[in-house]
Image 1 (cartoon, rainbow, N blue to C red):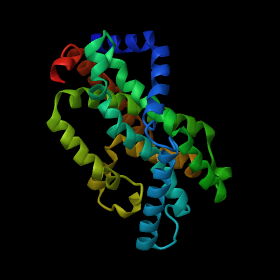
Image 2: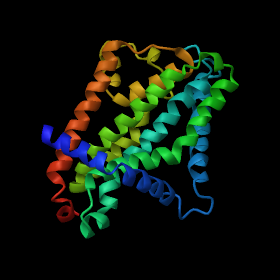
Image 3: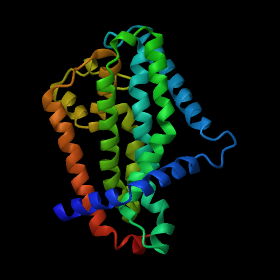
Image 4: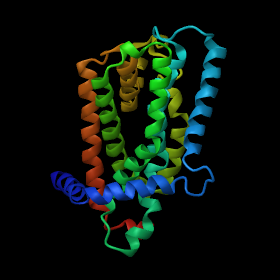
Length: 266
């Protein structure tokens, strides 16, 4: 396990410049065929945000959620989810979609998951400005905590990279897992406090079960950064970083063991 972790870290260190260049190319490639380019990404975000806001309004009216305006509540949860959703859908296909590179040249396949994550982040960076616009527009500017914002951005990217190391490896060798993954991804948004809040979850066991998903930590964290201040407890923070480190270790092991066989499986 330690050998595989050292291998992954070493390949990333040696190829930092390549990762950056290919990430920029990847972010451009994702919207290359569209006539208005990357604008479709933000149109997609605004459309989904509007639909979920209408859905929330029809169910619960115009009241506040956790003491904040419901539009602010939704946008602080949905924007980080949009990023993670792209990683889970597009990013998880990084090795499958890069099979031409893997089969034709001696390319370090282990950096492909990270290239995909960084490319998606570059493409979506302007989406996070929507959180600032909405939260500051509704008068929450004084509640903004820049240190927490930077910390949770870091958490989100670390989780995305660790998770993508695992997913890209398994999806590259298993079509059945890819189908299961796609099915779970369609319903995952409804299992997180994005359009609902934890005050509605009364049972302790279900509350704990829902918090097992590490993306919940990130979603709650962005609300902390923009409105609530520090609300995550130490135990939950330790759990989150334990999951990230565990995913990175497992992902490194899978990438190290499977790198010789990707071309054969694909």
